[in-house]
Amino acid sequence: MTIRIFWADSRGKVILVLVLLWLAALVFDFQLSALLFPLLAIVGSFVFDALLSRIRYGVWFTSLSSVITGLLIGLIVDPTSFTTLLVAVVLASVGKYFVGIGRQKHICNPAAFGIVLSSALFNRPVAWWGAAWGIVPLLIILFGMLLPLRQLRRLWMPVSFLFVYGVGLALLSSAESALKLTFDATPFLFAWVMLTEPITVPSRGLWRYGWGALVGALVIGFHVVGISWSDPLLTALLLANIVGFFLKRIV
Image 1: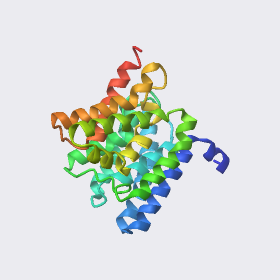
Image 2: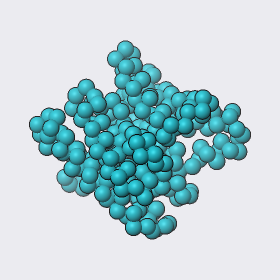
Image 3: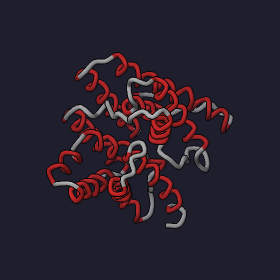
């Protein structure tokens, strides 16, 4: 793959944003685990994607999506638990190849699928450590993701999510608290990168414009009901993926 082809692919731009986020986190607070976990997750994602593709379809296959999945898992999973990381990577690949209706037609966001199940299985927190440390990661995500999302025509998705999320938090607490929680790098990483994953989000029909709002409403709903199982952002995304899977067949 040439640099031109890599850059022309929206996934190449997303990879660059995530790598910049990773490097910034290392500069902010260097830890050996912060260096190794994303590397191990990327390698593991490549290996298990290729292996499960061979088992499922009879061909060895990986793509730039494997890199994105590995980076997301490496930047989000608790960086003190190698077992949680490994299982998250394996489950993400399982989600890609066995929880769907065909090749590259998985139902759930692979990284979210792996992280939520693995963290729940080992009772580990979802750390979001690669983003949860200041204003710099927020700026990297915001300005870095403008180009790939414009290319994919999905800029409205993170914007609508953050709007509903922020309004919901304001109704539950205060405007000051809502602003602080909304304009934080953690929901930005979720909204601008994970929420917009091409295969598991609606690409046709008018309701695709409400995708971000739907996920935002689910997150707020979890807060209202008091559901605290795993991570509310990722759990809401997985639930929306399942809802979207059926809606795409009737809308």
